[in-house]
Length: 343
Ligand code: MRU
Image (tube, rainbow, N blue to C red; front, side, top):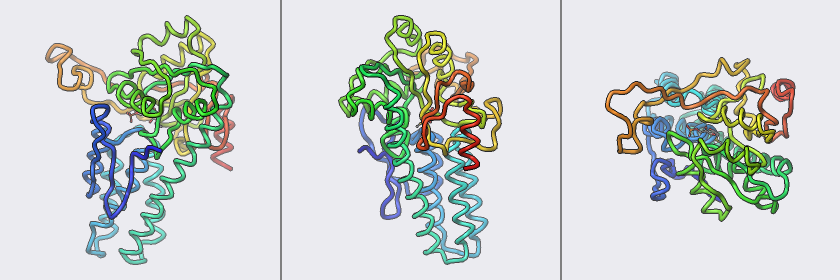
């Protein structure tokens, strides 16, 4: 299984996702500030993968410290720096909250023991994510009809998680169950996670797919060529409204119009208990050059005004079900989510 993040001998190794599909380049990260930069630059990306990488980043932060007298101050700085990287991905904050809790409980145990305890927690976060994805895959595959074409957006695959993937976890499980005909992969402007990353992953696994531009999805739905849309999530509000890669919301509107089921695949760690509805989800706005350039090639005139929100919010009412490791949540989503938060 493809594991995009590993931690060994005091360093994090990441598959540098900005270098795919041209080559599989491993980035070795030794310092928490380098890790923060790797998250900001999307060398590691996808909400669960960001959370896992940040948890290991906390370990790097503590291992660099030699003077126990400034432990609290230093830990605060590490958390602040990692927190400030990507504002929408709930799993980032969730993982840092878990690491902070473990730090508080073990801060007086000595630097060496503290580091080991934090590393154990980061590994647990990582392993639990892979396990959650397997469960999401197996719950989700049951929803997919025989001979199905699944349309997906962005990359919610192994690269975006600890391994196996959420939306692509369902794709993989449906393929393993012999139910899948093919995947339609949205290219996902502007960062092309579909074209560069999802297409690369599916090709590695020998899963049949066709790459399409984002604007083609409606036409394929109108022709009856899409049996289900399956996407990931960056943050889920308590009422089920879901933030995911820009372009997800129009897909949900199209799916609703064409009566195609629209599934969100995500671990429950993506649910934000502090957010009541989608309007409260912070949406990251990224650099205009992502829109005016394709890699290094300028595709718009100099000096144009640009908007570049990286995520949009799909209202709960357009979501057929949210597939989690705890089962399939259907309408009313808010009730299922409250049960998880209080269970
Ligand atoms: O900007 P990105 O590439 O980090 O956005 C990723 C997505 O929108 C994914 O769909 C989401 O994080 C879920 S990944 C399992």
